[in-house]
Length: 494
Figure 1 (tube, rainbow, N blue to C red):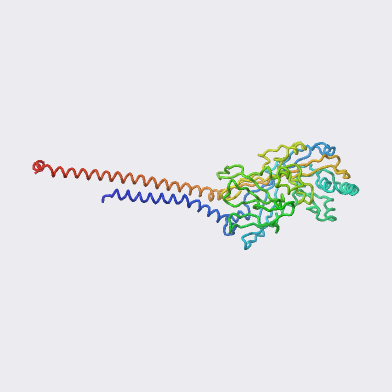
Figure 2 (cartoon, rainbow, N blue to C red):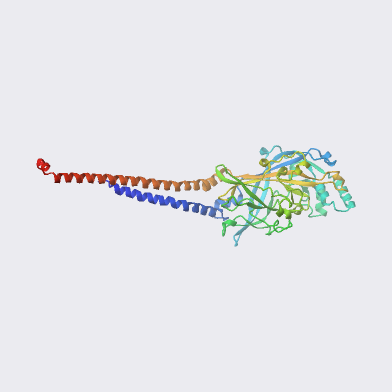
């Protein structure tokens, strides 16, 4: 049976039109399908097994790297000379995070407490926890500033108390003792007779109060009713606003809890989050685009105004009393001790702070804060939150331990909390949120190109077949006409 070429060509033209229409529909429908899947997988819901497990147990490896500013000239500091410090570290700890007491509420929020613990990682550290470090004694020099307005006789009595408990202006302890606590008779005395003055009892350490503890009771939105609100904080420890600062704006609890953000992030948006350790909300701004192990990202960094004082950035006036720009006074949430938070090595701070201490070398690469985030899902891919703890030191008359110390904001330690997606989590993330959307994007153009090719080729075939058929028919007609019009030729044929 002969093939009807024109009919086949028409069939291919129709098929090509259908494929073209399907590809064109994918152009508009494909992104909607992907966005719908992102929304479904972003909502905090136990039914979303993979995403819920990631949110609950945080399988991404997190580390805390601690650097100490070891004092090289303690005696000279007491004589009024500039402090000279040497950075020692990192001393690296693996951070384990797990959410417990998870409770879902009818108003599309969920409450939880996030517990954290730290384990020393010798293989990632430059030394071990037995290394000896000299730093300022917060119990003495911090208390001296706190009590400087008391009558001189009282200050003299306090100085005698320091001597009786053998507490000097500087501490020389091991890393482990400074981190997680050391025995102190002064701490025991204060805990017994002035309860509530110190965060610890029996032992005193810079990080003693955060190990094996929780970050408070967070209540965040699940995103079930509005995906734009997912992970945003509704309240912390029952508070919708803080009470540490001087203005309502500074006391606002903004953004998320700092681990995940709502999806569909644009370059114009910021990344706000609430940090219990900083006692305030922080906000990062877009810097650039890039990739992390083949996954597209937006890099967000801390703006220069984050710790700026009220003079340089008026909205920060509520965080005062302020000193030089680049310092956050956290005394109001740290038992009124003269403690300041900054970026490491006073990066993005007033340059005058570097003149007061020798041995500091700030750089954005080593000391800047950043979050690399996947804009489609709002999932951080690589994070480094770096903060420095500083103590205001000064001579206080009547407290002889302060000697002739020049007034200086003294760096004690800085630490980096970092984490990145890797292993099976990275593979699953890349497959679901990079590979599949990319394949769908290419498929739509493949269908469009295939449809157009089918239409063009089939049309050409149809045109050529029709042309050939027309030529054959014309030739046949000419032959019939010739025979009919030439009787001599017909007679000869007969």
